[in-house]
Image (tube, rainbow, N blue to C red; front, side):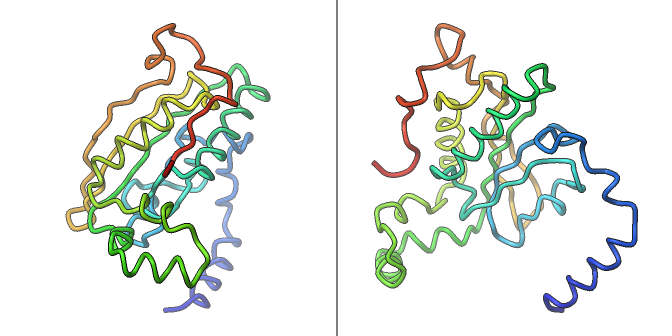
Length: 200
């Protein structure tokens, strides 16, 4: 098995009518879902969630963490929905972290320091990434999204932990909208006042 195998599979895929499943509006997938999860090969949403082509917007990052780049991307899709398709339908967002995550290796100070030095990365930012307690990091990342003023109050956000050994998915944060976390029931503060996820 190799990349060549996958490229051969693309030829077979292209010979089908699978692309007919593509949604007419790319930011409104057919299952109205936006999934943020880890880059780990064991956490492929097509596998453990049965996500098919066009079903969901899928964003993968180390640990499934909501970094500033991830927040920007969610905000962009939120903005497109608000401005280009204001009548919706709106989508739901799921943050999924998992057990036995490779991001936890960054909790080792020496490994983290050596990696930061070699790559020219910010060590403090790397120290924030490890999902050593995936339930806790999911709660933190869901909170980041719920309190981000760039995110529409029409989006319901939930959090889960996927068990890579058992294949099970446990709900950690029930679906909640940013509007429900705002005591005024409306949109949070202007975007320039947003808190930045990650280390401070």
